[in-house]
Length: 467
Image 1 (cartoon, rainbow, N blue to C red):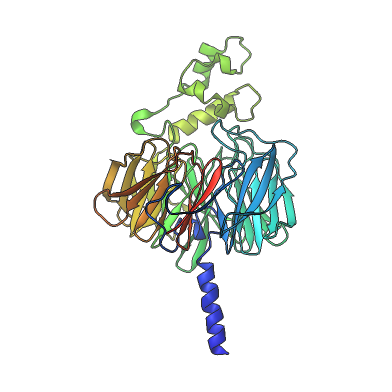
Image 2 (cartoon, one colour):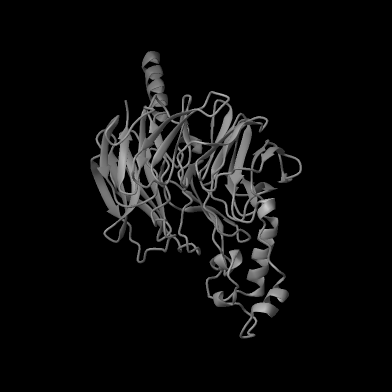
């Protein structure tokens, strides 16, 4: 009997390690399992490929099933594929009345599904949260208003402590929800109205036998208690808009953000409202329309300044954005545990402020933090000290990088928007590009690596590459 129990425990442990249950996999760390190929293409080391509805969500893998979301024939859908051959097993339409707007290169199906093995959770800004079993049967739904941001929804839900955690940072009325994963009942809700738009997925920081809910936002990152949503600490030093998600290693939390106007040599300065209004309020009505803004970086961000999207910028809206431009910081930095209150001056271990990624989240391999800046500039830092191993080295794969990096063994995989999968050696003291794999299709979704198979979603296909 003991041998049987030991076998079952060992088997379940192995299966638990062979899943990719949320955005960036187990724990949101971007760490895969097995030994996937280094070189692959549509003709080489491909197990299978299948056409899928348009979307940017990443694969959620559990056992022999893969869940994704997409837009098909004008309807948002959640669908499931067989892991072995890519066959579609089921597809369910989302009961959305309208489809939310998205960035010109975005998608209304961007958030990645998450699962606890029994329930599959999908989130659409156009509708809200839905829970299914792995046969496609709906278990519960939580309709929510579409976020107030013209670029669409991106942050993915996660499951922790029996709760579905969803962060909805938007230009007006930001909040965070915790729902019971079994029933969809609200457990707690946190007001985050001081935060503006954000696209970063929350992260569970596990250290010293404890768990903290980490949420990156505009200008600040905050830690919350999973039990009740109470705030533990805050740290300054973020950009105006948070895109990348956190990660951690050896008790150190790693945060990164970059946006226009956050570098010391590239500040966007806004005049006081009274000065700007006097010079530009052509009709003298006390508010500012887009046509009244002079051409430039500030006018380019009019839709962000106009928080409530009514076509008029008030003094409060203008001054709020002016303050954000003044306080924004672009950096990669490390936090040590044990803080409370404002820990900016007490718990930052190290910082780097150059050659930062815009959207692509970092990954840790062999005690090093790897980042990829758009344009194909790779950097690696010692995770404990922040000392550069190398910085802004060209990988000869240009273009933007929206997919987040993943790692397995001694390899780091990161995909450009153009569809080049760059494989880096995670062991050397110099940049060593092991392969540049051309998929020749746009990629926005982050890869998943399970049992030696790497799953990569392009704008119209899902590939499974394996030796």
